[in-house]
Figure 1 (cartoon, one colour):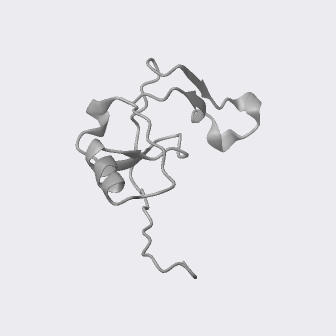
Figure 2 (cartoon, helix red, strand yellow; figure 1 turned 30 degrees about the horizontal axis):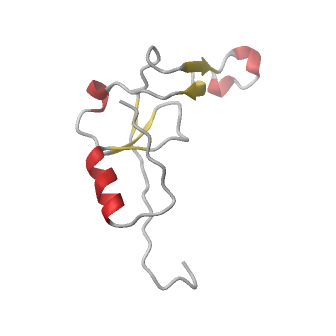
Amino acid sequence: MEGRPEPYFILNALRLIRCIDDERCEEVRFWEPRHGDPKKVGQYRNVVGLKVDPAKIGYTHVLRPWGWRGTLIVSERIKQLMEQAGTTGTKFVEVR
């Protein structure tokens, strides 16, 4: 980044996994035909209190949940490494 002397890193999460545990989330809403966006029908419209199924994630360390791409999920190990490196601009919330 111009004007910044310290190094910076960009994390690009390309892995999408269908791992959201709908039953354990506080609230889950899906796009429906009535919402007027046919290409989104069946995807998540809103997720509150996100919970994931660890069995579906396996040993993956960085991923985005299928249908809810605004969220980045990292393993506890990656979280620790980011904290040790002094990474800024992150907020960690447990989703298991």
